[in-house]
Length: 228
Image 1 (cartoon, rainbow, N blue to C red):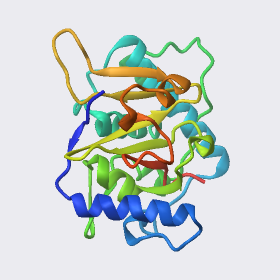
Image 2 (cartoon, rainbow, N blue to C red):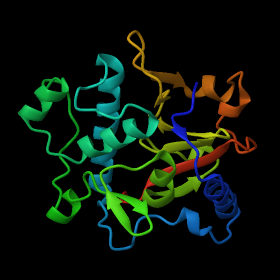
Image 3 (cartoon, helix red, strand yellow):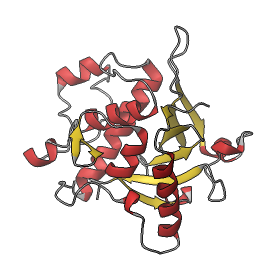
Image 4 (tube, one colour):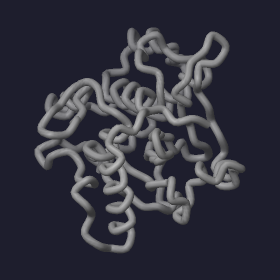
C-alpha cells in the first residue's frame, strides 16, 4: 500500500486524530473534526441510501473496468471526489454509456435531488472559508465529513477510512464486504486501484494499515457530512 497525499499540515492531522479519540470517548470533538457549515444541505435518509449505493456502484465500475476517462486526478482522494460527484448526478442513458455501466443491471434508485442538494456536486469545503472543485484527503475528512468511530464495526458502505502515515495521508472506502482504494501511483501497467477483504486488512502484515483502534496511524471512520 502507499499513501496518496503529501502531508503538509502535520499539526492539523494530529488535531484531527486527537479529536477523533476524544469524540470516541464521548468528549467534545476538536475543531478539526467540524464538518461543513450548517448551511450545507443534507440528503434525506432515503436519498442517503441511494447515494451510498450509487457511490459503491461507481467505485466498483472503476475497479472492474478500469478508470473512467472522466476521472482526472487519480489518487485516493481523487477516487472519493469522483465517486461522490458522479453519485450526485442524474444517471440517465447518456451517463450510463459514458461510465460504462450497463442499464440492464439492477440499478439503485435516483436521488431526485432538489436544486440546493444538486449544488453539492463538485462543491468541496477547502477550509478558511474557501469552497471549490478540489479538496485534499485531509480537507475531505476535516471539512467535509464527520467522525464516526475508530472501530470499523461502526462503518457503513461509503464511509471513509483515514490513515496518517507520517509524511503522507491516505483514504480508503468501506464497500461493505471489502475495502477499495487507490495507491496514489499510476504506471502503464498498473492503474493503482486495489480492493482488499476486511478480514485480510485487519491482519495486514504492515500493521500501520490495520484499521484498529490501537493503531496510531489509523485516525478512524468518517462519513460524508451531507448524509443523514
